[in-house]
Amino acid sequence: MKINYNKDLIRHIEELAEQNEHLSKENKELQAENQKLRVQISRLEETLEKRINDAVEKAVREATKPLIAEIAEKNALIAKVEDRRDIQGIA
Image 1 (tube, rainbow, N blue to C red):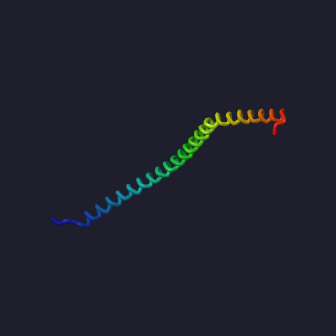
Image 2: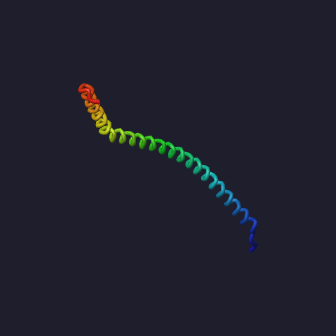
Image 3: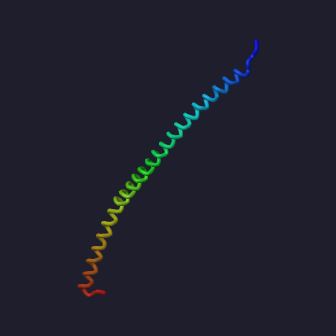
């Protein structure tokens, strides 16, 4: 019984070439999918950043409303006191 190493070697090379072709195709598909995912992540990050900024701005507005109202009241009170001083001639 004669072993033909050449046939086995050629068959093995053909199998490896086929496997390489399959892996190359799969790699290209994964690269394309990876690129799509990167674009999606970028869009999600932009959307998330905008939503966070909007929420922070709203929270700041809500938190400062009472302070702004208090400042307006105190400014009005100061103006009344100054008017009284002017009427009474107090320096």
